[in-house]
Figure 1 (cartoon, one colour):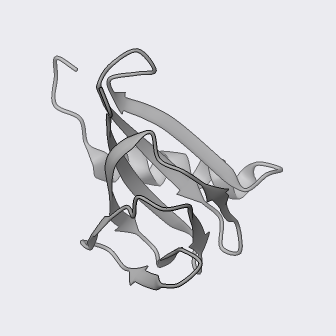
Figure 2 (tube, rainbow, N blue to C red):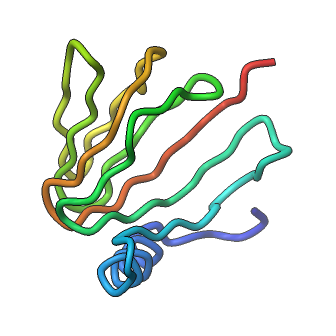
Length: 111
């Protein structure tokens, strides 16, 4: 990434794509990629959609840009609204969009 990126504009664009898509999701890589150690992905989810249980490939955080989400494990859950930064648990977790939502997922792959 060599220039300034407006997460606000990207969130609005991806959310519009998610709402219009068949699966209710949209995502774009903001920084890094599959081969980079640091990866940031802006993801948008239509209300009622989510990401099923999965593990993280390394340390990760989730920043809520728009909407309202729930991050959950088998034993705990955390709600996030715009401006909230949630650490991603190391155990298997899932994400649910309670409203049309956009998040910035930041992952640092384990070495």
